[in-house]
Amino acid sequence: MSDRANAIPPAETDLDNEIIEGLEEVVFRGSLPAEYVLARPIKVEVWPEAGEWVAASVDVAVHAFGPTREAAIMSLGESLVEHFERLVEVGEKLSPALWEEREVLRQLLFRGDAELSCWHDRGLSDA
Image (cartoon, rainbow, N blue to C red; front, top):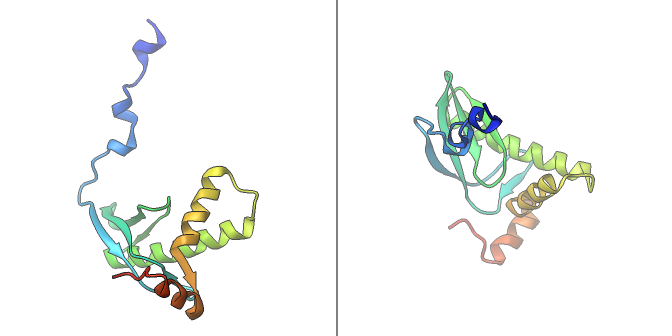
């Protein structure tokens, strides 16, 4: 029997095609920990899993958990900030994929009132 005959069909191993029961897409906006603010609303997918809730960013590969839907989303905000700060700390020693994530987060996250007023002036408000 050939290796090809024993291979698992791609559809059975492709997680992108997985159907997640209870999946909702919500919009997350506003303030984050450490005085960060989202430059624009982001899409977040939330779903129940094993007695908890999972919240996953659609923009970057970050997800978090919590006992409630709201707690999972707030935890995701903390995770986005922590992930971004770690990527900035590492500097230029990032893989291409992580470099790209850092640049996406650089466009999403702003810190402090001065930067916040700048993105409002450029017409990037969350309306």
